[in-house]
Image 1 (spheres, one colour):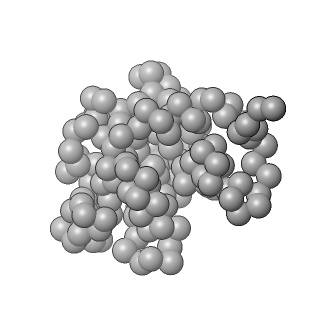
Image 2: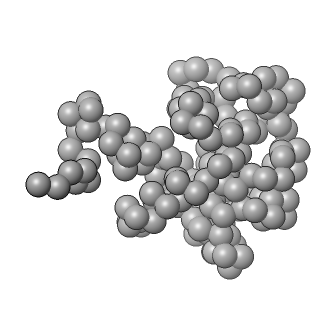
Length: 155
């Protein structure tokens, strides 16, 4: 699935509070550094992992389930295998009245979960990383010499 850059930029611009499902406490794991990056960019990141519930990460308490999170979550970022995503999305749709986006990480795709979310008017992104897309769309990758395909200045 290919997403329009303006759609992804809109999602990343409007989002305020992200529940990261499957976050790790290990700083070398992608779920840790993606959540950390998002928190450094000004997003309120709510870590969700039942194995670490009650601990602190990025200034927030790790929650066991989405039901334990603040209700203002407007995006979930799923770091779980594809087959585990439908019940996560089902729970998110039940508990977050402001939910606008379901984001599934690189390698994670669930047409069933996507259909469920879209039927409720919630945007879905699959098989992409919000950290990478943020860096690409807001110019951070260019500083490292990457061709992002984004034109940032006009003559």
